Amino acid sequence: MTAIPLPIIGLVTAVFVLIFLVMRTKVHVLIAMLIAASIAGVMGGMSLDDTLGAITKGFGSTLGSIGIVIGLGVMMGRVLEVTGAAEQIAYSFIKWLGKRREEWALAFTGYLVSIPIFVDSAFVILYPVTKALAKKGNRSLLALGVALAGGLVITHSTVPPTPGPLGVAGLFNVEVGSMMLLGLCLSIPCLLGVVFYAQWLEKKYPDLADGNGVAESFEAIQENYLRGKETKQLPSLLLSLLPIVVPIVLIFLDAIFGAFPGLTSQAGKTGEVLVQLFNFLGAPIIALSISTLLAVYTLMPHLDKHTVSTQLEAGLQSAGIILMVTGAGGALGTVVRDSGAGSQLASQIASLPISPIMIPFVVATLVRLIQGSGTVAMVTAGSICAPVLAQVPGVNMLFAAQAATMGSLFFSYFNDSMFWVVNRMMGIKEVKQQMLTWSVTTTIAWAIGGSSIALLNLIFSADGNFLDPFFPLLVLVVILFFARRQATQVVSISKAS
Image (cartoon, rainbow, N blue to C red; front, side, top):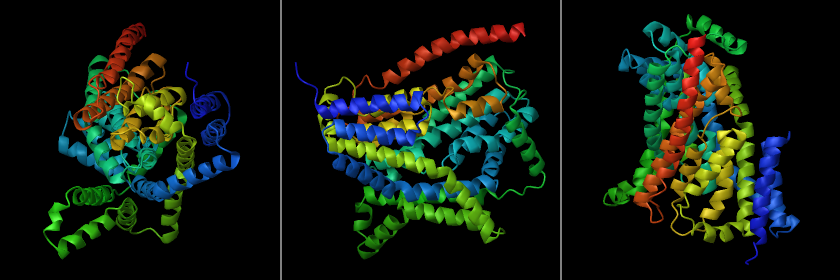
């Protein structure tokens, strides 16, 4: 019988300790990840000095690559949040799509707005718009709320510069631009699935959510919004979209020039200058710096310097803990690589009946179910899996990174803050109804996203397995089966009341 190598024993022990500390103790996830990194290093055969050095190096290198981008992204998001740009985008989509298509308008609003704005804040800001639409158009508040929240959470989980996906891109050492473009594309089928589910909910349970019984804190938010709406002057749609669209376009152009060097090679010196220019402008730090400046000078033109600085700093404060957790994830990943656990696990993973890119998907899914935070789930999956998959020949690290983000969407439940925000804002109190409203919604996005990335890997990579796309769908079928049984009980409860 072959003995299990020490580095693997150390990594397994570290993961169990990490899960225990997060679930059963008051230890914050940041400290828990640092403890896990120390255990993985020392038990894996590294000296105390080497372990400390690996933790420091991993923490610093991870934040060095994505820390500034996260800071710029949250500052830009803060400006969009406080100036009403997000609401203007929502109103414009509603106007374009017309009556009876409000759920599509809100879903696509969420799809765009949540790229720079934190998902919880975005839902709180836009929910009064949703409630007014439901009342005015005689639509189900449940369907419109689910469509909006679904659109928000999907891009929040998969598209940089949202901190989670940005951190995963750094851990897997993939280009932020590629991560952004792939995330935007993969989010679309997830969004369609969520909207169709929202429409089904409207047909089955049109009166399940009426906004009554909302928690007092959320009621105050709604009242403040409605009072301020009377005098609030929203920016134009062009100015609202500019800070979101400009960095995406710059990063996209940089990716195009990088992927097709033949486009500019024939243009000689001019083509070379163009490539260098877009390499500079398309770098995430520069692109987001430009978008943040655009947001400040176009959306806050009349505010004084002190007020603008206060708002930008408020955004940075909300990103502080995410930066620390992401850095700790990088520390754990470096220890896994330096201890030798990554290379030793790589040979075992290559022989598994599923593709290597599905490993971070499964790990993120399990961590999400255990501790609730999607950001922590994807960062943990990245920190554990990235150094391992880097040793496996032929693995597409971009696909693996997106698989980790998709896994973080699984079954939002009591331990996820967004679960409470969505259900309490809509006044849904009964547990079975809450699961039907939001837990199933995120699982639909999880299954579609997981199957989509597995299908892409099957088509474009040599290590794809034809069984991979069916795994998330099979899990979704099982959850939908139990959800339908719960739905029957929901109907009975509604009729009895």
